[in-house]
Length: 395
Image (tube, rainbow, N blue to C red; front, side, top):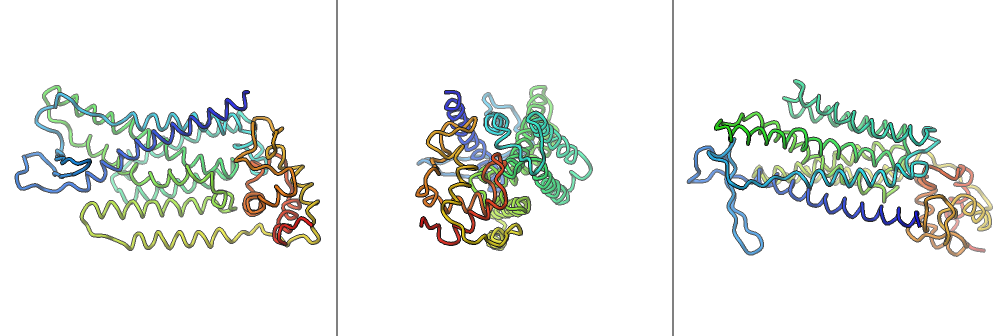
């Protein structure tokens, strides 16, 4: 009963995280598009930065953006913040329900670093807090006045964090933590910079003062960072479904390249919406990097010579010892209520049916068993590889 309740908890939290994420990213993309699409109008009022006409849902909309603030504060002002907060909260609780509750299975990999449950959880939490502090100090330092230099240093630090996570946690958890770190930075930008600066501007207007323009500039910088970080964080979020990425021995390199690809795609759309031309070269470079990743993931320095004379009985013994604790009609592994993704490996026929999946996750990427919880050996992986390479025969 508890196992089923945890399964439902994971599902509901993941659903909530997706819903809130769509709301946050959707509004973020819209406002960045709106900023980039503003144009000078013929009858533009003083203090207005730009205007834009829109059509949607059968109606016309007219928007204006002020350089600092309007002459008078409107009676009703819409704020955009809770989408970000709820996205982070649902994601944090989802990470806790899966990676903290199931730390021995998903968070810790004894081959990487033999941590205790609370040691691993403590390192996880500390890394998120430390990551935000370092980023925030960089933005507030003299480096923060140079957007290009700040972007380069920030990227290098994110790549360093990706590598560092692979030295502490399981490969799957390492990717997840890069996504959690980026998500924490983005949400903290909203909570500790963008919204507070907006509140300061509103407070000065209520006091009959002209708001300090620096508030808007600071908030705009953090908002732009969030815009460029969105696609990398989405990649990290969905990567746990694709062990070909995080399961590679140089998975942190793949993640670094994916962050570059996401940045290039966002830059293409930002330039296009600003009216600075359709710069297809950015998409071209992104495409070439994707192709490069395909070839890179095909190369794996861990591959060894295949065993000889392997039979289905040999394979069945390995699977029974290392896999069926989870992949069975009635799993016996603590915390697993039913076979993950419905994959059961209790008969030779079932093993053959899922041979491609076994090859991908237990042989090529070595991401199964998670955290190598059942201690599958390299020799056993070689047995699986040899049988699959020979055609996964049952006789």
